[in-house]
Length: 193
Image (cartoon, rainbow, N blue to C red):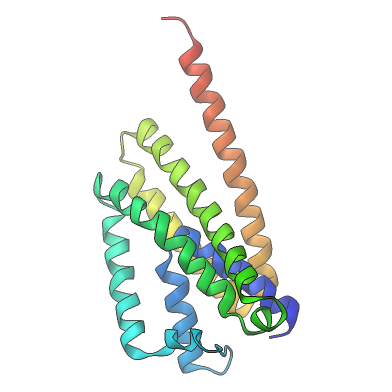
């Protein structure tokens, strides 16, 4: 991958990690292990090891289930607040040209910020969903997040420029949705009686 494609891929993967930390890690590990499309520099090539892929797959299944169960999903989001930014940092820094062109610490910080930002907006949307749907909408929202993470992961690997655009569009939509929901919430609370 050339420099720009690698950079856009890094942003797409870090964005995907904000929605589900395990899906992009698994995607990158599998693609790097079984194809020549993606090569991971050391120490990130550990993601291609079978035992690491197995552990990530197990965590992905646990995440998929835990995030669909009321009350458990809130606790799991607390774990995700730590895991998602770290996964984003690893994924951003793992992109070979980004790593060679940027200082590894800068690449890791960029991934941490991108994944943390998307996870933060995801976490901000969850209480709104809980309040407006009584928690019934949370599993649906979780499934949308999982699908979005998978889509962004695949796009980031195979069509990085599109992944970057989709991540930007999703970021704008999330910001607008959160601002709109907060305004509605405040207006609702400001009414008499």
